[in-house]
Image (tube, rainbow, N blue to C red):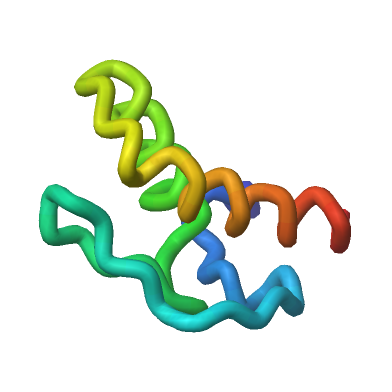
Length: 67
């Protein structure tokens, strides 16, 4: 059996944060998938959505502190 880590919810990493709604309407919370976080980070960079970069970076920083 193969398990794709990107399909795991953020809560599995043990991080806790308040839900964040991005400028494109996507809401990230502890039940969001890791894949969604990274896809939204890539899109924010590609689409130059600078207002979303700090909230996304803060969630990624939480993950970096746990893994």
